[in-house]
Amino acid sequence: MRYFIELSYNGEKYHGWQNQPNAISVQEVLEKALTTLLRSKISVLGAGRTDAGVHAKQMYAHFDTELQFNASEITGKLNSFLPNDIAICGIHSVKEDAHARFHATGRTYEYWIVTEKNPFHNQSAHLIYKKLDVNLMNAAAKTLFEYEDFKSFSKTHTDVKTYICQIEKAIWEQQNEVLIFTITADRFLRNMVRAIVGTLLEVGLKKKSIEEFKQIIESRDRNKAGTSVPGKALYLTAVTYPAEIFTTHG
Image (cartoon, rainbow, N blue to C red; front, side):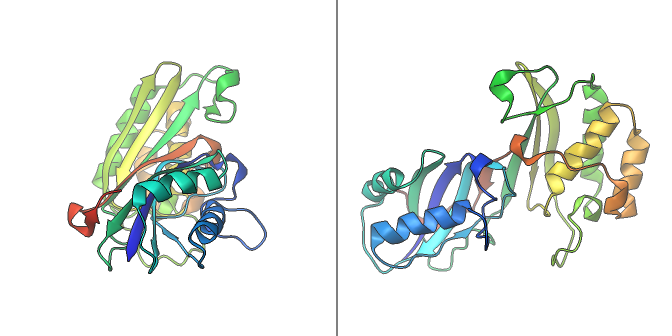
């Protein structure tokens, strides 16, 4: 049987989602907990890989097992095995060929900015002291819909075969003291959201114009884009799948 695990995590103490040879990862901790609980070697494969320090409000991973179990009961037990910064939201049985990464049809991220010192957001938001022109940043963000190739915002020397992404949403919104950038696409390149945010901030600080922002995308040159912002303020908030891959819900 194949199962999808729906989980959330605070990434502060982890070197990203994916297993690392010399650093702790969310994947490693989850696999160890599942292996202990189910008493058989369990490997999980995630919907994507978040970088070091990045959080997930909703993440999915799949695993295979021959064991039969009650999904709700196992969810509770698994949560008791895991540290407080990782939470299992549900376990769902899926079709045997369902794939957490390749069957995902959309992903949404948020990036949090604060413009005044706030002790409650030291580890959850990126502090920018200078005043930002949010209207300019939103105007620049809208131009993302005009493009499909985002090599300019991709981490260099990666093994991706295509830089094509379909962006469906990109907007800055003020929510109380936090300025939140929300972006949705069918897929994202490594480091893409943090590079886009870093470049949009340069527009908001009036260091770059909207026309220059468009020229950066068209250049397909990562060196021309802005600096990647810190991972601590980035959240994977949603991963979507076709309903037909699920067989039952736990």
